[in-house]
Image (tube, rainbow, N blue to C red; front, side, top):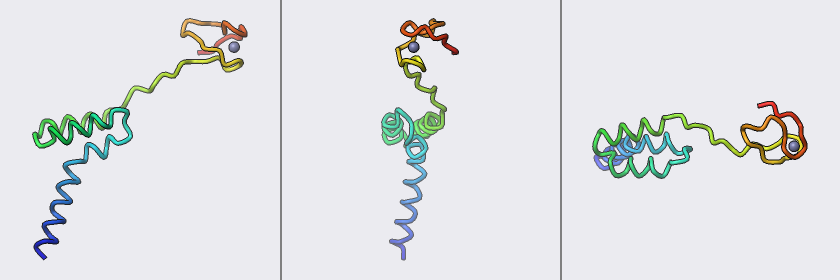
Length: 90
Ligand SMILES: [Zn+2]
């Protein structure tokens, strides 16, 4: 019985310890969050930092814009497509 309670307690502690890793699993730098969580999570500061990092909203990746008509690559300063001259609505 004591062994079962010990295993349950350890499982709960590990789940709480790696909470930042679970929260940040979908992030681009999930590996870095995991490393910080694993290596510095035992310091309360490292754990809090990794949790905050995991919960921080990422800036959306900005894919290269392309013309909706012909697919030509656009610069953000273009008002008309350089390939097919369609007006660009940014
Ligand atoms: Zn175009």
